[in-house]
Amino acid sequence: MTYACEHGFPKPANCWACMEDGNIEPAPRVTVERSGIYARFDGHCEECNLGIHVGQSLSCLSDGSYVHVGCEP
Figure 1: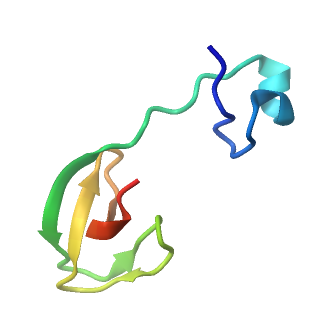
Figure 2: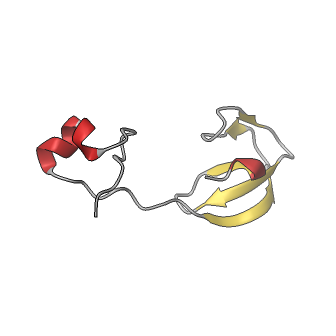
């Protein structure tokens, strides 16, 4: 089975690391663990690249990060 490159290229053949090492298995998919959590501290949402502010509704992802409720991957 061929996967899209985890580094953002459309095919593993476009990626130097994937060509060197063969088809690298993609990183495990991040899932939502909990949703509807309210921020107690300011932070940064990696999905939309905007700030997280105290009181905003968040989702906790399986990798331990927090994102806005509407920004889940």
